[in-house]
Each structure stands twice: as C-alpha cells, then as structure tokens.
Length: 100
Image (tube, rainbow, N blue to C red; front, side, top):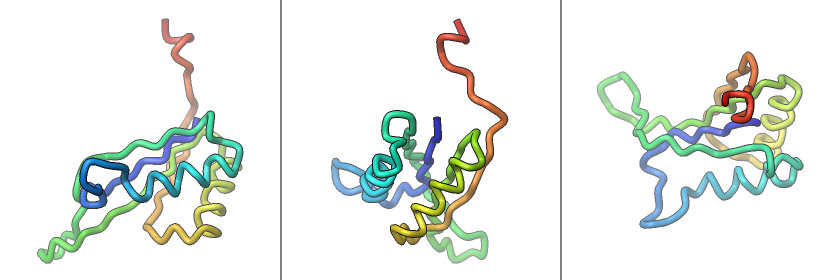
C-alpha cells in the first residue's frame, strides 16, 4: 500500500481539499493504484533553516515495492507535480487482519 505524504500546512484552501491531494489521487488512479494507495496530509509548515523561514513543502512517497515506487515517481515527473519529493522504501507492510 503506497502512502503519499504531503508536508505542506500552507497549501490548504479554505475548508477544502489540499490542491496536491487531488492531483496525486488522480495520478494514482491512472496508475491503477487508486484502491491500494493512500494520501496523508501532514499538517506542518516545513521551513528553511537559514533564518529566512522560506516555505519548503515536499511530498514523501512511502512504498514497500521499489518498482512500484519508481512507477509512481515517473508518473509524478510526467505530470509535472513540481514539488520536492522524497522516496522512502519500507521494509514491509502488515495488513490489519494479521495484527489481530
């Protein structure tokens, strides 16, 4: 289950959807991952450490399958997502049923 984390507390539109979430969800659907992937919005304001507090929003792609991750990154590039992107390869995923 890929998890696309959006770190950008300033991107929220009044009372509604984060603008990147809609784009990312559409891309994931086009890749056939809409039923498996999730987007998580992290309500924070990443800023530079240079004292200027420059906003530094980014997206983190968390995935257990390296090929699937590269497929997602490639699609983000093709759709010109235009945001810094981190890749986090996970050691695995345990479904909720196995955690009972």
